[in-house]
Length: 366
Figure 1 (spheres, helix red, strand yellow):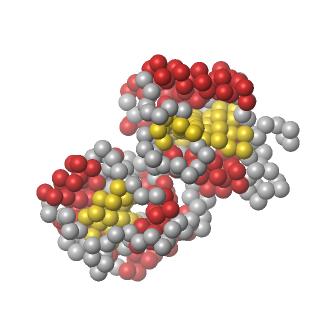
Figure 2 (cartoon, rainbow, N blue to C red):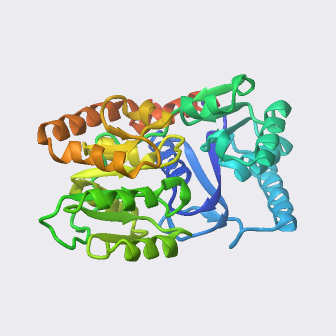
């Protein structure tokens, strides 16, 4: 393997501060720590993120059909010229374009990573993914949780591999000098991190606050539902207890998690949440929606609530806030469980799958 090419290219659909992008970012650094040359490409820029990294946007904005064809041709030409050892696609459009281009360019190892449950992809996309599997353009289809793989049914299991997302273990400290804004430091603080999108179900979280009159909520993230959520905050009279902070630099997230009395994630669905992993590594008590991916990650180390039920969410939070011993036990259990998801081990599994040898002289993934 000493003379084999050892460069891995990851392609992600859009640049933004979201979960799949975080996975690619972590793998990039873990690959380099293992002595493997790594490159990250975004098909287009959607939002500012990772601008201090050497990542490249292939287009400044989402391309139309002609522009997408141009991206495909550009990738084929690029990879025929420099022949990477492997190409990894993350999320739907990158999976399709990257595996097509890599196959046409003769890239020897091709992997498609699936970050979305089948039920939350459109019928058209599910059909395309079935064709992608049938054509065997990717040598392996990686699903980020067993829940994700199961959602695609028995036909998806051939050639499928479950590799969970990873997390820093011990957790990255980030910039702990940064202090998240507080309206009243004497109040218990709930922290939610995620896009302001229907998937994350912030509306249920806001409704739950009516049952938790003494708590304050800090929400990190940005998205299309900001106007609706701002209106909901005003309508419910929560302006003095809720802060919609928007996007913050990734290095500020650890400080926000560390400040939380309870980390909450009421999502309608998750594939395998990076926020949950980061809160686990930080040893924070969590209350999360009772969905398969949360159970898979956390087991008994969290409080659960029925999806979309504000009263159940509030009761689960109350049970943690009113029982400090239980809160400590949940946080400590979650921290121990996070050890199974160390991103160096996750990177090693990808490299093994790709047949790319880590450099034994580098203190990295092997």
